[in-house]
Image (cartoon, rainbow, N blue to C red; front, side):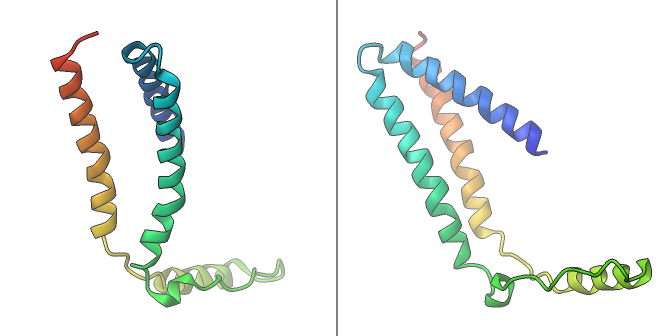
Length: 117
């Protein structure tokens, strides 16, 4: 999934850069720098926003590592116990974060249909 996401995001980013250069040829640098700045800002701020929606016990560090002397049965029991302790995450912030790129894509498509280059 990470490979597919990385490849599609790379293609989208490249196409958007080319389109920005075509639209604002003499002044494209300012728009490209603004785009990269807002991406960096969003990458920094989004975990801080989601952190407020997580329960306090999910923010603690995981238990220590298993020793190599433990048997596979004990390992399975430890994994089952730790997976049962994973808290439910509210879907609201993730739905909002998913709708923003969809809305952005629709606005870009509308702009492309209105003014074709």
